[in-house]
Image (cartoon, rainbow, N blue to C red; front, side):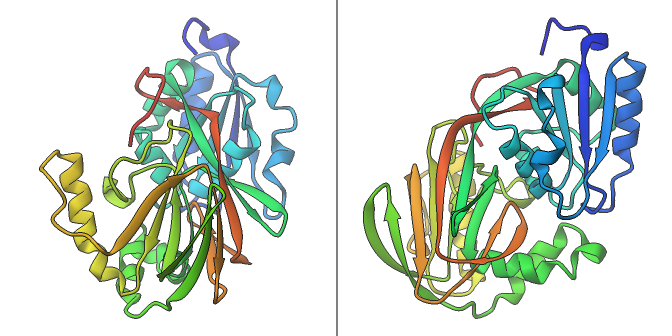
Length: 310
């Protein structure tokens, strides 16, 4: 993005007014961009209109800004996959985990500055396939306990914001368990659990790690099987992840999670489980297939580096 003066920048802003509280700072960001001489087009997203429809003329723009929650950002990223067009994950939703993983600021003027002359990092995307229909995710897809948590959080988000996810997790006292049949890069395995998560980025709410050593630039997805029990029993694993990030030694706890990497994983469950990808709950249930799309998207970032570790 460097070496191009602001007047040459054609910027497409995709705004989801239903995300978060309909963040008004997006309009402030647009004013900063226009004041710098950029040409900006704003498109407001509408329900049931495919993201690809808004990006049919994507080649006409130098940068795309997706202003909304993680679902909005991942939908835009998937529609832009392998187009080489940089995407800014504007944090206008509730949790904004993708923006957190990219270490983006929240100030609209600072975000405008990144659009005009920020760094760009190429990262992997995930693709999820359910009954022949394909969608993309940048952060995380999952079946079971995490999807149930997101479902329960919907009624709480308007009042409590990001804390709704924490409150919902505390409600999962006795989540249902099932037998998962997994096919991992062609190899079958069977596990008991309350959920399966497939992660691309590594940081969850408040910047806490999902587990250690997740990289969105390694051409692989990290699969986490949540073994039977309530969600509170996974707090020790969170402590282990934090310790690993801080290089504080070997894990103190183990046995609650089964973690491995894969390029493609098929997930079947003895009992149908709800699905979520990037915070959006979907009516589809297991089975599903998740696969990595290596280096599929270029995200705008504050740092100038070629790969990203989270």
